[in-house]
Amino acid sequence: MSARIRLKKFGTKKRPYFRIVVMDKRAPRDGKTIEELGYYHPIETEDKQIVFDADKAKVWLEKGATVTDTVRRIFNKKNLTVK
Image 1 (tube, helix red, strand yellow):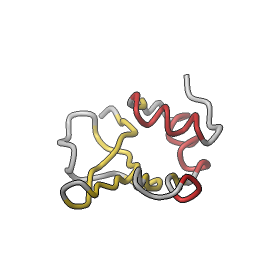
Image 2 (cartoon, rainbow, N blue to C red):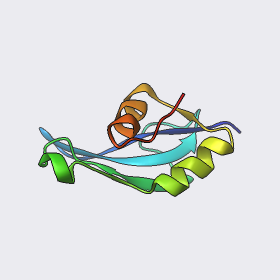
Image 3 (cartoon, rainbow, N blue to C red):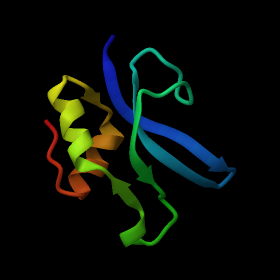
């Protein structure tokens, strides 16, 4: 099983919010998650947009989980450098 850190979409039309989750690479976008790391609210104010547990994310990265491009940008905004 290969794990991937990616976004899981919630919310309503024109009011989306996302959870940052660890999922199997082959699972559908809104499928079953392995672990939730945090959330991303693109509509909120700048200081409330991104919240996640950096320690859990580092553990998953050490285990070999890959990161999607969008989540990589989110992590880099909060100074969690991902290759």
